[in-house]
Image (cartoon, rainbow, N blue to C red; front, side):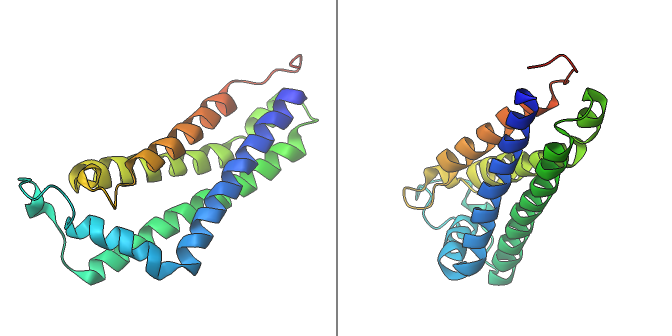
Length: 165
């Protein structure tokens, strides 16, 4: 039961984190929008960079991209909350029941992983060259986030048995 409780609370911890991120992005939209705006504009990458042609200048697309990010963060939070509480409710039951309750958490953690790895590391970091910016480089933070999420996901998907701790 200890391992099951551990898994449940770890998923709930990611739910809490994603909720705080989404809440911050919604309630401080302007400050956090500036980040997305500058990444899309690529106005702080190396001046001689040959990838600047990738910049998106449409502010409407900046808002659409930012709203999409917030939606993914919110979806991550909601699915992890649901998944975490379903796991918690099943923690005293059979291994079969507990393993069957993992799907919501797996989907939520996967969306969270994809948000920060694909959205921030791949698209922001590599496509838009965010790593070149001294002021608007979110790569180190995104890396911390998705590594934490993938660690919880790996731990969660390990099959539970009825003889576990």
